[in-house]
Image 1 (cartoon, rainbow, N blue to C red):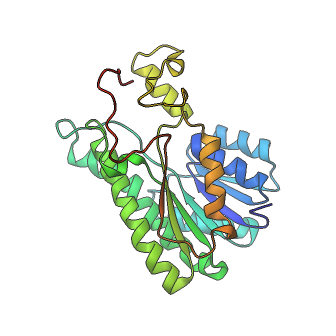
Image 2: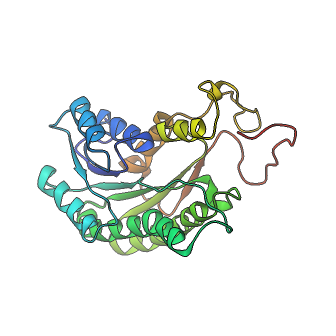
Image 3: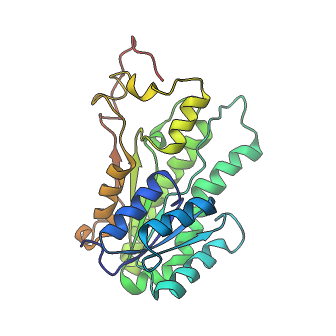
Length: 262
């Protein structure tokens, strides 16, 4: 098993990509601390994966002292900490016309500052194990759609931080920092967003080829499969890298103009 005996913290682990990473990590031999906000969903995941291999801590990571408490909880529960997955994020629309300073700061606080503070809090434990950090970003980090301005900026900042610390922390502490930028992924939240926008229950079967060349959207479990490599020792000394997981070349590709964007 590729993650045998490792202890991994996964934020935003009660749903979507985080839940898929927690599941795959346990399958690969890890013990996992699941952090999120949905207590009932977290408890269900622990029941599914086993209380001997998983535990849940429900707390907003933007609370004062929350990152430190999460690290302490992991060490108390499983005796060590080998890796963290910064997956929790605020995903919502916003433009220059309707995003206040307070709202903009909320995106930065949740999507950029909270991961930074958790990395700081975890570093003393991670360097004991020559551990790893995996940040979950977004292909929107490169530009983003017009209605995703603050979200895209926050993920762009996270990507720069990954590259910066991937160099610094490997050299100074022996800790690897890498990032996955998912494209369009069919999470529970994405399904809810599309239905809230007025699309029918079968929207996922009516995808423009420009945005889903394969005819379907990426599944969370497929992102989780990639995450295993970055969390495992197979990654070797590779650090400061960002991999885009989308089903077409994201940069430099112009979608056909005759297809409706969902």
